[in-house]
Length: 543
Image 1: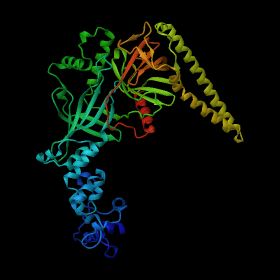
Image 2: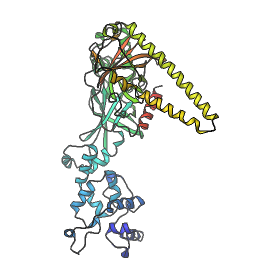
Image 3: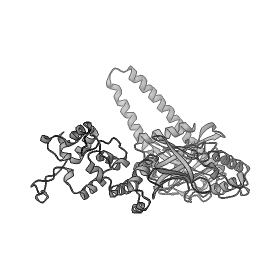
Image 4: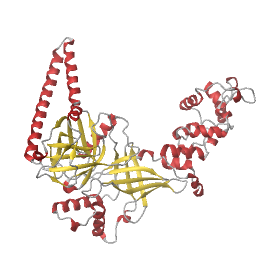
């Protein structure tokens, strides 16, 4: 009551003007504070009834008010007792500094606040600070669209689809980045560079855009095909999932039929013609991908993905990388760190290892000491070193499993706290193992010569000839359709902060990975738990 009285500018002896207005409303009379139940930002010019949330908001506005300076004393010999006594231009500054989602509640306080919240300066500032809109929003006045319309009907309404997404395109996946671009919201599909140029920048093309053509509502347009924007639809299924639909798929067709569509797609996807690809198996894979992906006609479901969280102890900065995968071309992989392990998860995939699967796993507790450059050319020598470490890892895993079983039996039988120190010893052992990679880097030289062994196939012969450190790892291989998947031993090779490689021993193949140097917005995971849950979800969907 007291808080409400202070905000309305009346003392408790006179009662609350807001509650009095409500009584007048019930008797059919008008009041200075009109009820308004709409809480959408586009209605932030309205007044409304009081609620518990309103009182909390009022307390936040009124709290921590400093004692008035003598120069601030009003004509009545006192300082202003409420926000309503402040000049309107000062209220515009105050309201403009608040989050846009709080302004509808503020508009329900009284008609004065509602009238001030119609000021476009407030909403222009919110568009700029919350969504990075740097366009000259004053030009909107020509079209009759206000900054409040842009905020409420475009930015606020579609805020949940901003960020990184993975489309559900069977085993192929993809990477979609939805951003605010000027006065548009655009969904950009990111594509790896043409095979095998892994160090080239990413390519991207628009799949859809949303903009405000008139005050009524935002317009969704499909950008797929070669005939310009056309009518589309977006449905937000749930918090981390949305779908797109094209309402005019005839815009995707070409006059030359499927053959012309395939040739155009091949130039865009691979940068070449089918005649340039001599490998018969590769031709089959390319044709299969075209047939599979073109049937969706940009009617897709997207699921949110996060960038991996980083730690000062990470070997390198985690993130997204482009990698070579033989006849499948270049694919996008997410590198993340999990204690003693590093994982490479496919964001785009292929019929053998689909998107969402963990393509490589690096054991950071088991560094590899490569032989000298001459012996490194011998594939048999490298295989011997890796298989020895593989056997060591297998023994350690068996010992660890046996130790845990013994601990469980001991804890069940023990009646005294004597078993407690054993848990401490296990924790120390784990800590020592997790620091093995740092010790290996301290002992190893800053860089060492590197060359691929004879017989190992690489799509890109322009790989670095020096490396920092190598670790034992495993790579996932499978038959077509993800049949008979198994993890096989390999070598993780760290070249520098932005490039690493993996030698697949069983396939006698080498994959080179290069960092995707794009600053993605709205892609940070809210927590480590949320990121781990996301990884688990995309892997389960792929399986």
